[in-house]
Length: 440
Image (spheres, rainbow, N blue to C red):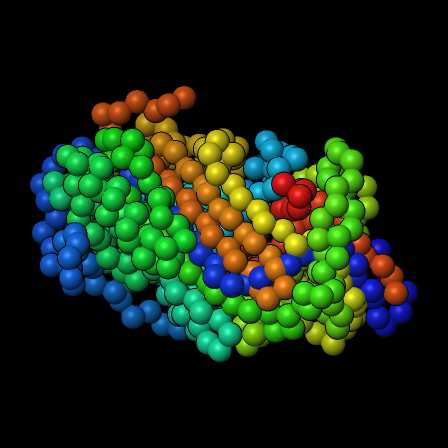
């Protein structure tokens, strides 16, 4: 809808935006065959596995925004493929964390495998610096998000079986781009212990919100596990008043109306493009914001904006050209677990099939590494009056070489819509969600 004046009244299902504690975790698992142990091993501080760490190169200053745009495009592609399979379900994941976990795997890939992964990840061409410099700049930008009203901590790690060789060049690459070291844990000989150590680290990194990312069964034949975790706790710049939260109807895709609680507030910035309406809900400090995206009336349940339309709206939201509106959004609690979170098919359809085949090349990680066997995603997102609470976890597992692959305008958010949480300076997408039915 197009605004008829300088102010647009945005009314949607009251959505409790509670950015309390938001957690994201992702893991990539790479299988391998037994070999000599890595040579760079030092005791880890306190009780825990042995650590090997590469040499982090100090890269020249680079612009992280191309990676933010790449991760957003990657996230939209994943959501499009995922929603096609589950068109009537709420879906939520972290494009940033999944891209980080897959990105660490990409640094170990070579040849056609690396090219296929780069295409799916939408990695930017050289121009604003090398990839290593951009990755380093992105890590620094994420660290800079921590401040008044926002707690944010990121942690990336490579886990390796002590009988396997992890190449020094790979250790240097993940240390430089992701500030990641290598923890030694008995993946091949004692997957139960390895799963426990990995899960304890993820639980600690996410303040206990994600307690189980991998299982012993997932680690059978696995030689490496690459993990990425992000903890986010932020509050709205302008909280919704709990007393203004009221029940109203929401019409899910392919179903009749349901009654859900709506939050109400005013003074929010909005923009429109290609029939979409975007509303910005900033968090304290102005470094993070959620964008609620309402598709055109009559759009299908898996409608997503084009990258150009999204860029146009977010660009307008950052200028004085944005209008102001009253908004009503559903108070929602979203979760994705189990079979819904398996993303093998989605990534293959996006063009990453080679990485799942026995022709994959992960020789830059280790001569024993074979291919990706599974990508599993789990996440929750709760949106309320005070802020947003989000958790996400992904596990990407690679199979050992000896294993077999398994086969005054009123905008009403009373129908399926999207939510996107981003770093306002780089555009890095921390959360992306499809709200199909707030009542489920």
